Length: 154
Image (cartoon, rainbow, N blue to C red; front, side, top):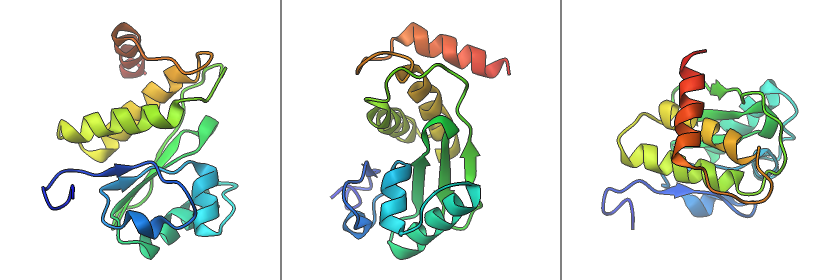
């Protein structure tokens, strides 16, 4: 339906068969979900690349963002090399809501017309804020602005 109306479709996948998300704009599995769906245990950058490329070639989708916890995330776009986005060092209290945050920020960035690489970088920063809190918690506007400013100074 989204494709019919020329709207981006972002998916946080569930289950092992990602083919049910055919033609989505981007799928955002975590490391475990991507490992299981690809049938490749993701242990390092080599196995991450193999899993990401296998998933991209096996389903009709052009983009995949695999979140890898403390290692950040990697964006796979058909026809381009993987784009790794390292996590910023933070104390992790709770990963609840991190995937939802990634999808929300990435979706907002895509809707605003930003390139996927920039949207994924913003999502990575936002996820870093969320995991530094206990339980599921929203990101305050000032928190996000401060994190962006710290990121820009690096």
